[in-house]
Image (cartoon, helix red, strand yellow):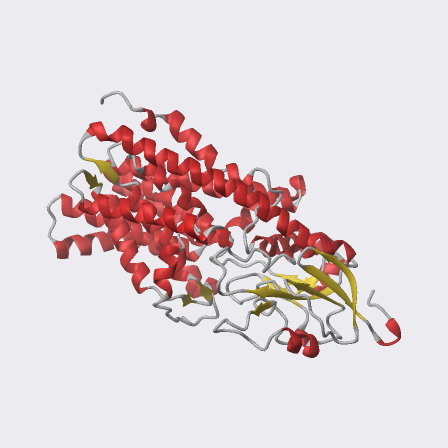
Amino acid sequence: MSERRWWETRWFALAAVLLGALPLLWPAVPPLVDLPGHLGRYHVAASLATSPELQRHWTYQWRWIGNLGVDLAVLPLVPLLGVELATKLVVLAIPALTIAGLILVSREGGGGRLAPAAPFAFPLAYGFPFQFGFVNFALSAALALLALALWMRLARDGRLRLRALLFVPIALLLWTAHCFGWAMFGLFAFGSELATLRAAGVIWTRAILRAGLRCLLLTGPVIPMLAGGASGDGHLNASWEWRAKIGWLASLLREQWPTYDFLAVLVLALLCWAGLRSALLRVDRPLAWAAAVGALAWLLLPYRLLGGAYVDMRMAPYVVALLIVAIRPRAARHGAALATAATAFFLLRVTTTTWVFVGAAAAQEQAAAVETALPRGAAVLVAVRTSCIEWSAQRLAHVAGFALARRDVFDNSEWTLAGQQLLRDRHPHAGVYRADPSQLIYDPSCALSPAGLPRMLRDFDRGTFDHVWILGFRPTHLPADLIEVARSGPSILYRVRRPADKRLP
């Protein structure tokens, strides 16, 4: 084998993996949209047994479900590091693992050499699903890429029996982290296997059948799903949003600045087109076919399935990334120029993401600062202004999770969907204001705009909630029993005045 070029060295791979973690080094808690809510759940799981306040509000019963990836990684670290630092370290590892997976699959697809275009794909580790805070899925997806590299390596070495033995537990691990990540791996594995069989001259019908049979060993998670560990409530609950699919492609790198983010996506789109159509570039067949199978599934997948939303959106960055890490120049002399452009793109996106995350983390902490005025164990009705047209992702939707993690409160922004989470509340009288997404108050321009803030403030159960936390509004007409006690940035905290002004303990 000829001498490795600079982008093919282990030093470059290590530097890329470490740079992938850079945007998350400064913030105390990664400023992802959903993560404060997850943080609150981790705190309940870790501290419920020792906190009377949490026991008054929550239950947490362990069960094997396909949505436990970061939960299981964080909880053993909490006694040593605390819930916030433990969460930070685990989430910080996800982009690094994703980039490591992309490097390894690119090497497997290219005979042991990293494609010079691969760094163009590395910013997709911070794609919209990760920015949204789908951390269990993102962890499962990162592990799926690593597993795909192993799947391809064992096939290349002809060690199919060993692969069959290893991938029964690996499939269960992927499903436990997140069921959609496991399903995505199955699609990618089938695509790569199909490409290998076709390259060996196997006819289409036999290749499809044989690839399917080889992937049967990945179906082990069906057993816990049928035994009650499936996500959702036992029904598919599928719904499609066909027009949104184009939006998900445009949102691959959605972060802060629409023009900048869209131009970055346009660069990736042109690269993918050139890889497939240009005479100067080619693609590695196993990865290209894996991406093609993933793209077909993405096209057919619903927006909502098994109680989970954004199902199709989650897959898009990984499908595109697989195709990009398969792109290589036909002439070796063009490799350095392509690798230089790709690395510059990666460095630019890492720099801007780091800048955005510093500001976003400060904004979340500013909004969460009112939690210091909450009595420990309070019950808080949260209302968050939510826009449907702003490009920058709303990062305050679950900021009340900080109060749950720090003050042992009850709030209405946690997820308690059967089959998807193990957390349950003890407040049936809260009614429709019991769990996510009841805290979201959409702008009137939104097609899914509910009744709005005035109705919430009028109708919520005063016997359940003793405080109201409003984010993003400056309400002028308030019920007479709401008394302001703190404000910080977009947040205003009110106490609910009881008869004779008696407060809850």
